[in-house]
Length: 124
Image 1 (tube, rainbow, N blue to C red):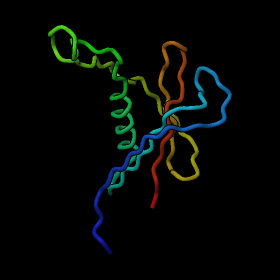
Image 2: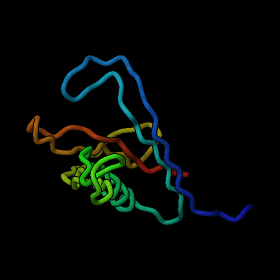
Image 3: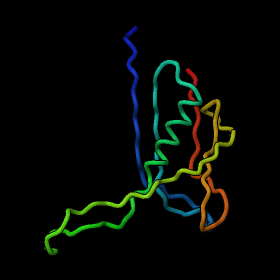
């Protein structure tokens, strides 16, 4: 048997599906897939990875400072928003992971919790 080495793989892709459009469902969106493999990982580790991921989302589109061709000034610097920090985890059923959970975030504009992810732990 070969020696086990911990790994992390992530993929971001555009996804299309036939959906009725509303404030929380689009026919086109981006989906992130990830697999983290190591010994001794728990559901708590998964929740920590998800919290870290969603907190890092939210780079604002506004750039401060001057750019090429502008008057001299500081370099372009993205102003970062705090990302998605209000998260809730709800147990869910996925046929390929156990335990599984849905991830919800509070949307201030809609004034409600909306699903932002789904996750689970693979069992060998």
